Image (cartoon, rainbow, N blue to C red; front, side):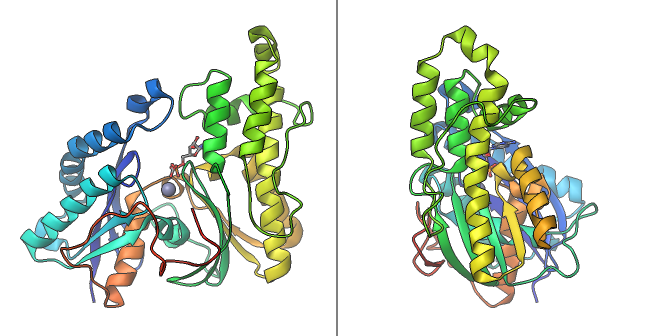
Length: 350
Ligand code: KG4
Ligand code: ZN
């Protein structure tokens, strides 16, 4: 039995390292955020992300070992995100994990980043533990800047994708709206804050595919409609209506996500739900989801934000589960921009 794993996550613009025990306990996790480096460009610049991972990864691992008071002899395995993601970013994590695995003669496993998001509710630490009666099967809505998908999580490793966005991810839709109204990247959280006190019915924005009898979503029509609206308004108009604009736009996204989740609960009869990914921080989504779960007597878990946004702890949990199932990657492990066919079944995921 492998007792712990050193996990590395560099799939996009967050450099994150963690040590996770086989029971899901997070011994330590450290992340370096690159938002400031990408803000001037209004989005993640792959070359900048990759360069920053290179600068940050080794100091982060050294600091993690200091903080957790562990030495190299106590690290028993390596888990690293190798798909899906930005190739240059993934390579930094993979090369680091492979080098450590080879030098220390430790087992290594490559992990799908989305699997990390899906299993994040099972992580534990001093302040968080999943509800004792929480287990498989459950529905998972993963909503972030890079992905928006709905899964039936039958058991560990058995993930059925039932729906996905056809275009933008929900976080991307928030960020693009933020950019339109003059917020710095990533604008999602600022749109959320500015929606406080706003009236969500003031502006009518489209809810893409909301009435279609499936779990697919689309946010490009919403983005285009918002663009047209913003272009028709003066700067002063936008400022005077900022709260209503943000509340109306947020409502369109949240209503779409909630409609698809509700449909999934009705049709699958699964009563355990996980919402994860950076957008799970959205206050309107949290309020709606909590009220909905209460009304329908569902068990809803939204893991703490530190495990919802991109982090290495979730990769460590998926990694140690797979390593203890006997799975190994060899030194030919490479990056992939997409998930592999065997990672999920059902409709194609993003
Ligand atoms: O999971 P995450 O940290 O990284 C990705 O994998 O993308 O998610 C980041 C995304 C960004 O698009 C960000 O704007 C969005 O999550 N986000 C929010 C909020 N906090 C973060 N969107 C809406 N409301 C928020 N409070
Ligand atoms: Zn992610």
